[in-house]
Image (cartoon, rainbow, N blue to C red; front, side):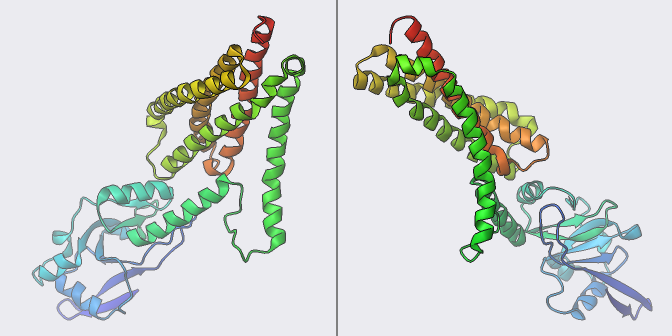
Length: 342
């Protein structure tokens, strides 16, 4: 806090230097911000700034406070310099001020700052008091760090993973998710086990099972990556979730028809059994559509439960595509076998 006595009024003009503070929810670091009382004049503010250290604030905006220190406006250094020395800052400030609540998620803060077109926005607490300023450069660093964490989490790797990290810690963190994946693999294996008689009578089906499940997993990962990124950037919200879900289903249908026809034709030519091509193609279509649905619904459900979508989405999506892919394929194979086509 810097106090500067003004000769004209014989009073102290205080410029509050708000220091950087970590955002509890997302680890954001706010830039320092300067605020002045509404009754201060342009000359008083300039004189006060001259007595401050050069790094007191990284933002090019000055903020104006009213009663109880609540934020009421902002002005740029350019406005301050060209104004009349006796002009009060409340007459120079812009009252139509966009501010960020300090408890707002990082992705929402990023979206608001991007839409505003400004280089920085003030951050306020629950009472409307200035906490700091969110600078575009600092936000870019935070978003980059968050994107790296999401990428690691999608793969089941710890967010602090580096080459220099101790081997024991890296192995411990990774084995947890491998065990979880093992449990889901046994679930898929139980589905296959229930169709043992079908596979025994039509062993050719076993050759195509990894293809159906693998393509479904790949399609699910594509959708999931897009959805997690959209959630992180605030482009996907529950309000427009239905529209995006329908879009991804349409993509799943297009890709399912394309890949289904291709794999069905290859299966027919490879084994010389037309019914096999139909079974593989239809199962592939169904699994790719389901992968698109799971890639949207799973991360949205986790977000609704206040669980990081990047943390566990891939496990659930892969489980859905494996279990349902095997079920679709083997059920169709059983039907074709009962009808005497296999």
